Image (cartoon, rainbow, N blue to C red; front, top):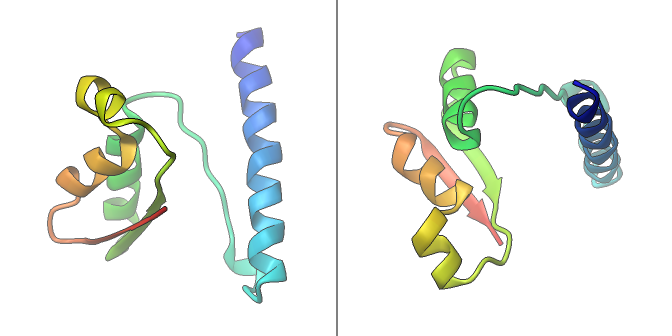
Length: 93
């Protein structure tokens, strides 16, 4: 449990940094929210959250993984594209 709490704290800092970047780019900070979940695959959690909230578009980043890594373990963005039926997915690299 201690490890999980440390991970949540680190993610909170990452989210705060991302929010600051969005606000500095002109987005209203009141429209930015974050949520963490620690069950299920990342891709399925993102897609389910979007469905539950009624979003029609998901925007994901793409970290630079090699073709070999993507072949063996897949990428989160690749999985989101395949799971998000009926939704638009932007993959930003």
